[in-house]
Length: 403
Ligand SMILES: *Cc1c(COP(=O)(O)O)cnc(C)c1O
Image (cartoon, rainbow, N blue to C red; front, side, top):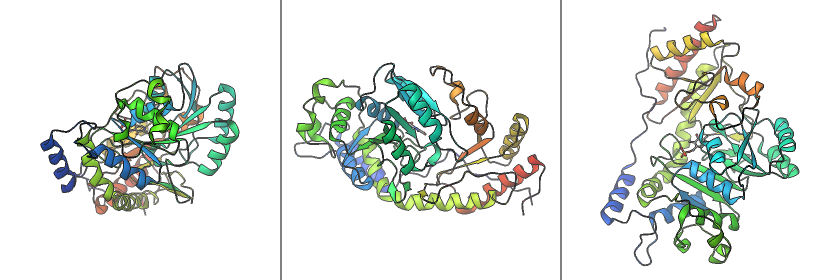
């Protein structure tokens, strides 16, 4: 049976929970939307979110920012990255990652990925040596985790400090330890398509008091750092308060208010994402034409999106596959597109990044397909989506039909 069509909307998120809506209304009633506009003794919504996220993440310090990209920029600057400095990052990521490196005046040095869609540690070692970089901005793109023990060990030997881009790994773990807790700092996004939704927003976590203090000042604290929820003690700010620029990247109370109730549901939602992901993957596994990236046993990702490859597929067949799945209501992204479409740009489209040869990454991206799984989809929806992809992949590949 190949006539079924999926009718859902891949960009439709769930509505915010009623408590989030009520909290937002409360903030709007108060008029106190700016995070430092507090009544005497009051702890703002932004400060409360920082405290609660730090506790949930198991981090000592947390700073709420205006976006995930701002969290990345602040982390880089707070780690001492300056103009013209090389910063390593994996070549498979989204545009805000090289964008954050560019925004602090630094230069991305792109590292190849493996077919597990994670950073290639051999290429990392080679490029760290060649570039003299001191910082790795590790993008845990689409939730795929490299061997974090090996990576941190290698980074230690190479003298690299690691900043984790956890836009897709909020709640993911490696050997039971939360993503974002391995490096010097972890950066999260609360943009609509991530694991918490405030439209725009970001969270930076660290256990390093000096870095946290610099980050708070960079975010634009107007010296009101005593009104934070998970900031270091005042003495940690002695140098940072006059050395760091104010780059105006604060989160406001309205967004923090809608995030706090969502944080309380996050663990339950992670289980819901993983159940949906498992439904899709179970269907994709039935078809030989489809290759799924390997997930190491120690990794416990959050299945909020699905990636798969059709090895050997050429550009024309890839286009046909996209058309056929789209005709049945399944909107896929293809990382092999020559020009950027939506979020699927690649390093060849980032004109601000010095051109770099990444043959292995290019070969992987040429056959890589991607889709997000919003929680507005039911598990049955996900089985149907998986079935449609499997049938069309088999048809385009001309190989065996799904079992
Ligand atoms: C979304 C995203 C970011 C940046 O988050 P914004 O909140 O949109 O600035 C960074 N890295 C990756 C991989 C992302 O997907």
